[in-house]
Image (tube, rainbow, N blue to C red; front, top):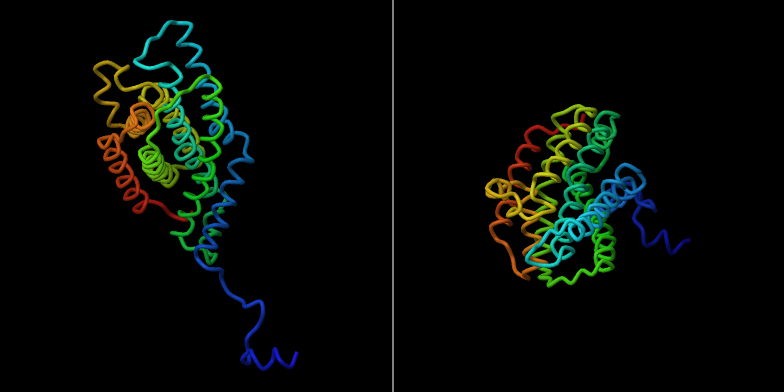
Length: 262
């Protein structure tokens, strides 16, 4: 005890009071965000169940109806379903969760904590990435069971996932910041269904005929094309990457101008 008094200056306490470091706060926020997302049945449905159903249904439906692609049906559908999973988590789940957090005052209370706004956003992105790792593992296992034989270019696929997450997360936070919680719920689900059906995320843009040139400029079409090129052709689709980067910048600017703590 005497030795402890000699090594510590007067007025120093253990544990030392004060906020944790910024990286530690972000890691804690990311872990909490991912746990909350996986504990919510609706979020789990969007994140895992629907993409898996789309994958199995698409592959089996292509075999029964007789759709012919330049590659096997599972090789074409799997990259699109991985892109769909990213969109469901980074856009729909994030928008709905953030909208109701603003309604119930969770975001406002976090604003009075030592966690800065940049830390909150970084924690939400970290939580999304953790959930996306789980989605990729589950969907890849199911696809391999269906006979998936990819020719992967992993840097291209990872870059597409990062840019796609940034673009859809920025747009999701923008929607949650300008609409009320109930309107965010309806809008996020409607946009998700429209993009899944007509946004060239699951099927290639070429499957939409003349409309394919338009949908390839949507974030859903760009993410789907980038994933297909990376996992089927083994290269990088730089046009799709630039489109995703543009949506990410536009969404970030809109969110920064409109998002409030309550």
